[in-house]
Image (cartoon, rainbow, N blue to C red; front, side):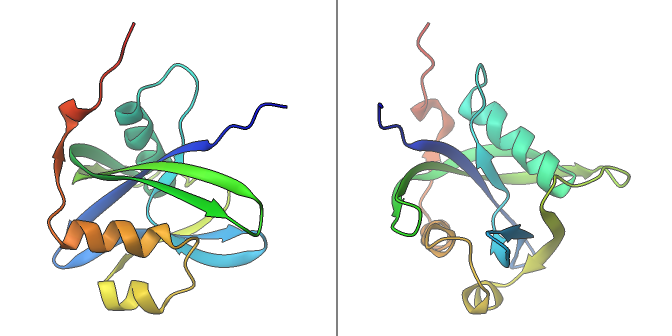
Length: 146
């Protein structure tokens, strides 16, 4: 068997010093996470973060920068995750759209509230703190080679 990391994306969206988060069920527990998910076949990382944000929050997301690329190994599941985190803004909300399976609700939370929550992974705080520290990289850091 060939080892493969899970390729994921996440979105940091700030409005009025609060961040758009999702409360979801993971392994039977309620956890807090950024809008995030896996890269699907035949989509770009930018397409993936736009799609995942819409599916999980009903907000249309316009990515403007990359805040970082993160690698984390879950010792509980013995799985490695490679996450590209984007920042940007929401353009509009789809009021009648159902949220993805497993998503309980969306929340606008302060950093302090997020820090006190049951987080899906340590990446949640790391990417948020990098964003707050001003980490921004241009989207053209990503290249699609055909």
